[in-house]
Length: 283
Image 1: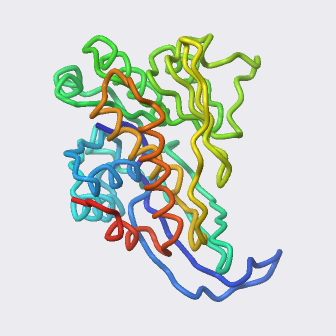
Image 2 (image 1 turned 180 degrees about the vertical axis):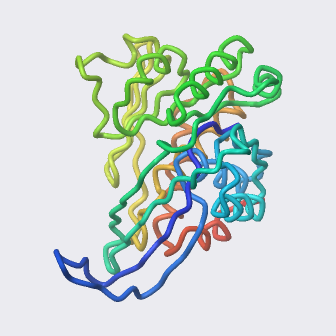
């Protein structure tokens, strides 16, 4: 199960980034569902997992695009705000030819309120693992608490600090943090209750630490990057699948090796969806 943000992503490939008051002609263009939790769900489904994404989309016409793309990717959607009339979040993603580096302008989830649905505890109890990205904070906390009560592992996608993480970190079995993640007081996520902390650093090795004192790193495959958009989300989706298959997280390094392998496939292929067909054992 993935809980969090679903967006419309407008993805442009360009051979140069325009400056102020300049225009650039795109070399390619894609439209797809995006967002951390949605991208993670798409990855998990491609790896053969049965995935439900709990999110807020609403009744705006753009929401139909999100639903259709996720359905085509094998993701079941539970929309907690089906009658919302505001447009869903839209992100403009620019990917630079040659390097695969991306820039993103987004609105995130500010206009669509997400409540806590009835039956959340039952749905969470039926899941192998729960990934939360911290968007739609009340929903994220409720899902993580339900997972904690049901004994289901929680994977937290912690990219940049948001206030809701103060409530989510103590509930996380695996807090997957970006190199940019910082608690405002400098607190260590392990000291706040997370069982394991993972730090991704782009092409550099992934670092991990556990509350029992174990620590280590996992090498990232060296590949030619064509498109880095969503690479972290792919990593998180693959990590959630691995944790669902090892709910005690007895072998975190093995789970991380699988996750970095999936992320390496993602960055080698341009576009938001073509890479999924290249996954070994994709469902």
